[in-house]
Amino acid sequence: MTEPKSSGDLDPLPSVEAPESVTHWSQLIRDWEAGADDSKLIPVGSCSKPGMSKPFLDAPSTSAPKRFSTRCLSGIIQYDPSEFTISVASGTPVRDVMWALAQHGQTLPFDPPRANANATIGGCVASGWSGPGRWHYGGLRDFILAASFLDGLGNEVHTGAPVVKNAAGFDFPKLTVGSLGRLGVLTRLTFKVFPQSESPQTWAIHFESLSEAATHMQSLTRMPIEIDAIELCSPGTLSALTSQTGEVIGTEGWTIVLRIPGPQSVVRATVERIQSTVDGPAPVQLPDEAAVSVWDLLLNHQAAVSVRVPITPRQMNVLQEDFPKSLNDNTWHVHFGLAGNVMFIRGSGTVQELHDWLCRHGLAGTLLNVDETFEGSERTGCGIGIWRHDEVVLRVARAIDPHQRFAPFVFGKPMHQHTSTHGHLMPKVKG
Image 1 (tube, rainbow, N blue to C red):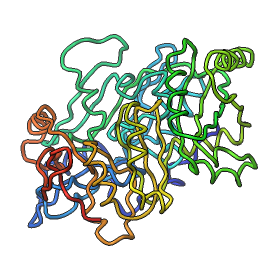
Image 2 (image 1 turned 135 degrees about the vertical axis):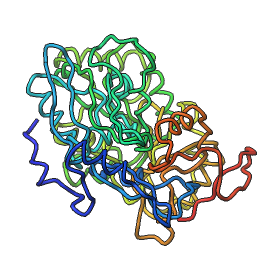
Image 3 (image 1 turned 180 degrees about the vertical axis):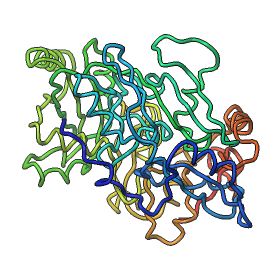
């Protein structure tokens, strides 16, 4: 891994105010006055996932939250490779953390997304988004050990402990995963780390239909073999990489992408076992350059609009068959990650039809990117589809932020109601 650029070379948010220290953040919170428009405060890192800092659709405020960046809270606070733990300030770029770990042959194996887009470690936690490595190693929630944050009164609260084995009290650090900046300002985070995988190789298996690919993928998940990551890409998802690498990758049908760790002999034995055990096309190894491009695409999901949707593997065929034809015609692409446990949708345009489709299937989507050039995009919330009511999260939020200074969570209170074929009530999105 190459040494990261300085944060000044990568800063994408010069116009977003960044309090210089935890003390300045604390003062900002304590002095916060919403004003006539009842505006709320929301912390961001580098805003590498801009859709997530938008308000929920039914948020009571009449204006968008005012963003403040944690980019000045940067640096590695404590790292002892022999203890396999690292503590970092929340505004530290993920690529800086990964580079420091790589110097000692260690890593965060859940593949923090958008590191090359200057994503911060705090933003990674707040998004709750783990990369392809979650399939084999577990996600963010499995690696976070301690979290410090500023509550709605401006007080710094320390939760968890920088040790691998800790069962004392409420495991609040895990609640910060996926909190979207609504439960306070993260200031310091501690993770356990793992040794890096040895020489992982990338293999692709091509299929004509989704049903064939899904059946094959589920067979792979039941085999007693070591696979770091297993992803399923729709036709055309990887076609943009062809011109960059000279390799034709999955342009005609569905493509399973595998990352297999270990020495060459171990990887070959794994591939041979797959071929001898599961009927289907033979896996094809991707050259290193092509593999880097593939994983960069699957880690970042950069597009004018990109959405992350938790699903189950059994839903893949139904969801693809019912995917709106107009979106297919406009070259929207679907990618099933983590062996079919999450779906990513990316394309360009408004999200109203996508929202309605998610509602029909009772699914909740989180916007990673939103196309601000389309009329009504400013009224698109960070969550689309059906977000289930979560009383625990709401009660915790009220306790942490009694004066409601942070942008709120909104569950189960649709701004515009209409009934789906499943009988659910849902918000109607404009844009």
